[in-house]
Length: 124
Image (tube, rainbow, N blue to C red):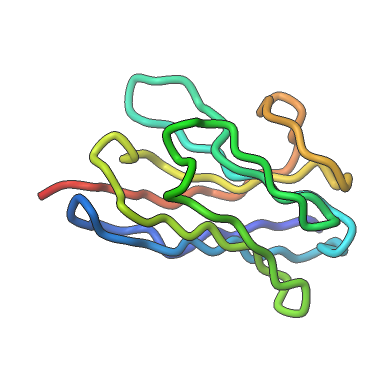
């Protein structure tokens, strides 16, 4: 069955970096867009970044522009979210998700497969 497993979260100081991984199984990653969402305590879930099946990347938060990048390695069935210059406001649980289609959407309601999430905490 379709499965997404995130890893790479942790505690990092402001200005630090983390690379999140989303390991996919049960479907052909080559043909699927993968999105990263995050949810901070007391806040609604928000889209962060997405990569289409043709490697087009789309960010959904202006606050991550120039700091985060998304990439995919189809041979490893994995999508990565590289996060640099992290800020306390990036603290959240980060989820990867897919609709099993090649294009991206910024609305989480359209995604029917989700990982369990990985906690990112940015604090000194």
